[in-house]
Image (tube, rainbow, N blue to C red; front, side, top):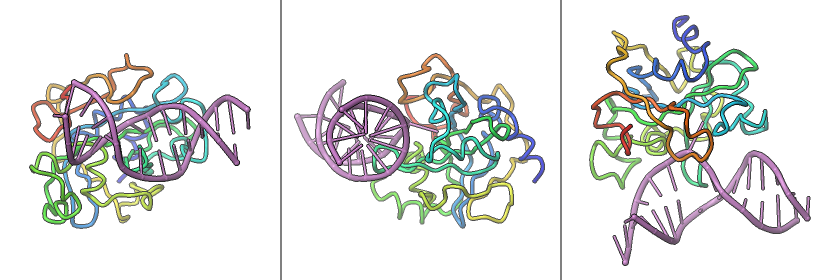
Length: 193
DNA sequence: TACCCGATTTACT
DNA sequence: GTAAATCGGGTAT
């Protein structure tokens, strides 16, 4: 899918809103991406890559289209899509999807969820619902036949269909409004931007 | 080798 | 609204 590779070649803050509306699929489970956040390089203090490459964040410096999965707070997995030019760190954190397929399996891995809108409305929830974990770190999304796949929307999301606001849970570079979410979508995590 | 703390979720007051 | 759960990476001894 050359289209995807071309889209991911840009910097994270430009790629992020373009990922809204794409389908994220893991086996029989899938959903539409409705919320993301962009993380870039040295100028972005909130980014894992802000202080240069390390064993953990090295994927952010690598080839666009790679999945970067890390553990947060010792218990939740978060999934990012690496983007930007090789050597230029950048990634888009997947914060929420609207589930479309494999709902029963998602409920099985999200036993504490009480409503369908709680199933995937957060970066950790989304990974649990799709059964994404550290074993998926480094997966290639461009090949099209890996365990995690991205499928283009039939028609792209117009700029009037999404909102942006400050990123969640960070203490540095709080002035960047690099959280992007589909407007009026109830599967977006709270607080709504 | 130690210590600190985070791109979160959930339970409980 | 607030705090606990839980652990590996990053920075400092």
